[in-house]
Amino acid sequence: MKRSCYNGPQESGGRADGWGYNHRMNGQDPKHFALIAEALHWLVDNQRRQPTLGELADRMGYSESHLQRIFQDFAGVTPKQFLKFLTRQQALERLRAGRSVLDTSLDCGLSGPGRLHDLMLTTEAMTPGEVRKKGQGVDMQYGNGMTPFGPAWVAWTGRGITFLGFSQQKGSAAVLAEMQGQWPAARLTESAQEAEEWLLRIFDESRRQPLKIWLRGSPFQLKVWEALLSIPRSAHCTYGQIAASLGKPSASRAVGTAIGRNPVSWLIPCHRVITSAGTLGGYRWGISTKQAMLGLETARDFARPEAA
Image (cartoon, rainbow, N blue to C red):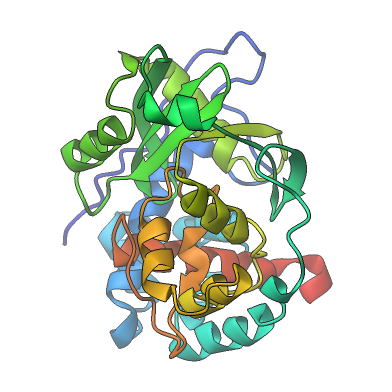
């Protein structure tokens, strides 16, 4: 039996804002991120054989009842139910739900505030002059921490979050190199504790805390990322639909490239873009991570009181 690398919650002191690490998020305890991440990835990787709760519990080194309670508190459904949301048929149904999403005009520009998908996000784009400087003169902090999808690197400035990438599949060094590559001239300072605080804010679904994002990209990339922000959690869209919504129906490949350069994954939901056949397509941080994200979102929609 292989036991989980998760060693249980570690107590930690409070923080300046009074929101301690032992804060419980309506049953979603951030101290369980490592456990949830390992469970989600294992279920995704073993979905074809439909593993039992007993197998998952054995893998994680927990009793079935304890593991199911932690998982259901976080995902809103049991592990067995979660497996049902990983099918191609589920993806196709969510594609149908997303067909009309991009037919509406995008009312919120990247320089203005707005309530976007399931989080309150304020997005701001760099000016063309700032983009050309590649981060020169920008003081940026960054760090690594745990999320429900495994370890991640996050970076930020006083103007907002500038990067969020997941390293469960790609490895920590590769994700860090991509972050540095997007801001090659910025002055970077590592801050591990603040990074963990940022990740808790990002994945705390119960508080809906306003988050700011500061984006560096070409005009076309910014338009693509703006379109991604219009996709609700309950739907998927295709690369072709994104291209058509921008008035460039033949630009699916360019759209795919821009999506692959999304600097703040999850917050800008590039994981909601799949192929017209219902397959996942690619994902910058690994297909297993993408499927875990989609499965979790679908499960949470199913678990909402209004969906009952």
